[in-house]
Amino acid sequence: MKKITIAALLLFTSLSFGQALVEDTTFNMGTGFTNWSGFGSVTVNKATLQPDGKILVAGQYINYNGNAVNCIVRLNSNGTLDNTFTPGTGTNAGIWGCKVLSDGKILIHGGFTAYNGVASNRIVRLNANGTKDTSFAIGTGPSDYVETAVVQPDGKMILGGRFTSYNGTAVNRICRINANGTLDNTFTVGVGANERIREVALQPDGKIIVVGDFTEYSGVTVGRIVRLNANGSVDTTFNSGGSGALSKIWTVKLQPDNKILIGGEFQAYNGTAAKRIARLNTNGLLENAAFNTANAANSTVMTIFVENNGQIIIGGSFNAYGNVGRSNFARINADATLDTSFTIGTGFDNWVNSIERQTDGKLLLGGNFTTFDGNAKNRIIRFTSGTMGNEQFDIASIAVYPNPATDNLSVSNIEAIGDYTITDLNGRIVEQNTAKGNSIGVSSLRSGIYLLSFTKDGRAVTQKFIRN
Image 1 (spheres, rainbow, N blue to C red):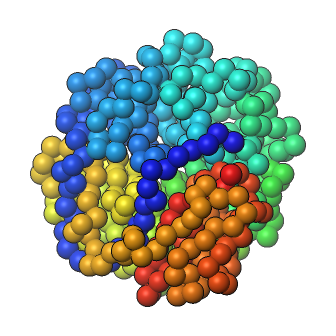
Image 2: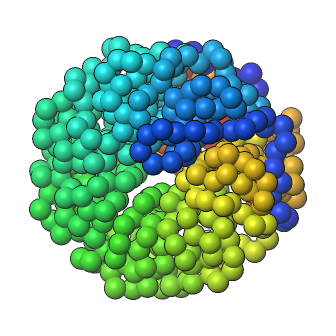
């Protein structure tokens, strides 16, 4: 694989917030993202962190802080434009998402039909410098929007959206492609979904959870959520109760215990009240009434971010949670009650649909907003970790080495850590075990970038490492 250098190993913890969020004033976004001439309005759809701390931002815009840019930019860690990233004229329509691949290349997808003036239908793979990777052979590609993309450990990619064909082959709203961009014909979905797919999540066992607007999948009645086997067929052990979600599901996330969080427009799930957010058992049924009947968000939940300590951060277009004012952004406890210590002032003036926690603990948000707590902030903002938690680990006291690693990864003070989890950059758990001594074997892992999570003194810690 292409060798990636990390100048310093960064550390973060799922912090216990005790006071109002404070903007990170070192993030120099200037006037932010402005102007759009296409369908819809100016928005950041996804902000994605690179291993080197730089930030890819995908959305609908033609300007960043006075610079002409089309729908994709890369920012330095301080928010300034990274001029080494050269996408040329970018895309001719909006980008819905972007992912950094294990070799440093970048996958983008959306509604566009051209990249830097060259025909490229709705999905493109970029080289690390932003130029188009011409070895990614999609042919005519998807026939309509690609709204979600998940990369499997073997490099294959599952796509979902509004398309009904891929390179001329009928595939209703979902397909899997090989690492070179060609259609994977071993992934058989029958007639597929009858309506839009909004998001896909990959389980550790290789099964695939699909959510969106659809009510049928491959001829089977489903309530806007279905689980597929690794070959694309419907997993009949997943039971959404027949009716499933009463209305659209926008997002799906897996918890570390593999329970399933969904967010969207729905107010009921299989006939039980569940207001825009719900938690499901691994079999697809509601976990319990206490979580799902909470007096929750009063409008759409668009994105969910699961903290290591079990708390959940949500973004969307709501203005209250549990009858408490929360404009488009909130943090809730593991039982779905509002975390009232997580205060946001007047919040955002419009929707939040991208939430990322940086490795240094800072929180990066994107969306359609133009203000936060009354101050101008065009579509992106970062909050500092300095006022967000009461305690931080001493970075010098916990080290991971060598990095990159080939066979074994050593962790200082590991005898005080115990259980650990290794996940890939898509959030898929690839190993859970108990540490013995000060070494963790990584020889069984594929080459790539991983996150090692463990606890120390009751607090969660995550460190990034590279497997050669």
